Length: 359
Image: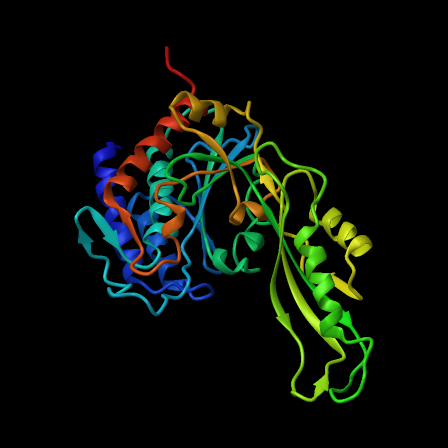
């Protein structure tokens, strides 16, 4: 199929996606849009909950499989919007609307790329497209529930706005709940075990603590206290102070190792991870996908933000049109040209990496 036609139809699909509410957990109508697009090209597909997936026509179980994945759920629009988040208007080359940048542009570009290669024969890799749900909330009904149902994945491209540069590694995430305990008392009486005063030293420890291993591409593990809660009355010293700690994990540690280190060293009375499932992810620099991208002039970098890569147990590359800094912003937009160029670059990347050259 000709690329200009694919580009035009992909942008039309993106406008329809923007016009259709798809907050995390409520993506049933955008899933129908994806189904209809595949039906239009007479491509068999599967749907589980609000996740839609399909494989290339000449799928061969003896070959490795490349996943093309992006999400069709969105966050809720913030109060600073000046435009209708569901209108999908184009002004000065910018397509405005909720989910346009994160990650509708990536989603339709990957889907167009899948269509382009759908009937191709003699590919080195199978292709598996998956438009998934609940990415914004790391939900159990997104890609996590799909993985047991789809063919084994050997490598993945996860569509997120990266200005079409290659995020070859991504930090993982562990959120911890911690407790600093003291002696509750009336504020008028002496108390040498005031939980709030004790917390001051704890905060200083967390601010200064550094994990030993530094990643070449992802840098340090970043540890940040993001919430603190204590007390309910002005005249009562509380029995404890509750802390929430956000830890962004580099590829030198597993999340379980981070938990073990903090349990052994943090000067708190209790600390517990909410989940250990969102590990860091990466792809080797010498992987053929990465080398193909480099040959096309793409740069590599390490991403501090989380995506569905964290759910995958295979090498994965984060790549897509749009700019991460626009995500979740008021009057979110993506340039129409970014989507058009994204489709072209995805196709060129796969032509180099998975298509057997005809002689």
